[in-house]
Amino acid sequence: MSSYSRRFLLLCPLALAACGFTPAYAPGGAATKLQGTVRVADPSTKNGFDFVERLEERIGRPEVHRYDLAYTIVTETVGVGVTPDNRITRYNLKGAIDYTLSDTATGARITGGRVQSFTAFAATGSTVAGLAAEEDAGYRLMRLLADQVVARLIAEAARLP
Image 1 (cartoon, helix red, strand yellow):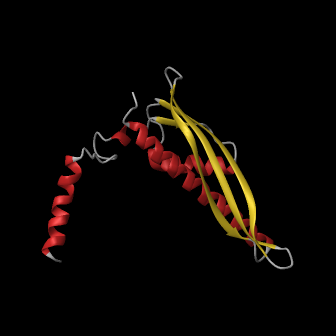
Image 2 (image 1 turned 90 degrees about the vertical axis):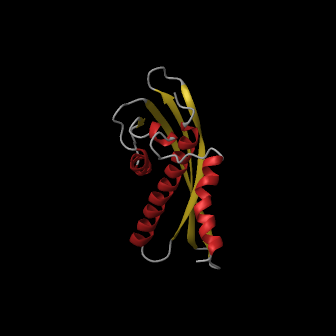
């Protein structure tokens, strides 16, 4: 390793500290305000269960119910791979989630927004394989969207009461 690389690695934390950077998950960091304090609305669909599962993996189940997270999930399947004889061989599963974080005590809206993404799956093979691929795509999509919601909540966490 060259001396330049060593100096860079040693000075990098100093530069980040000088600009006011604070790790989100450090003790006292912004994300610690969310850990175990957000109650996510009860899921009513498979997508909802996958979404809530990922949120609870990332920010924990509520120990102290301080914030409520309401959400609405919308998905759409779009055929994107078409053969010359007009059979669809590939699908995009597009999804969007509108979410709102509110204070439990006052009911006041703290933050909210919309996240969206997509995944894809193949429709070739047997019917069972196609259904399994579609279910897996839905699972991956909900994890992607949940990670986006968590990232936005962490970004807003410094302003939480």
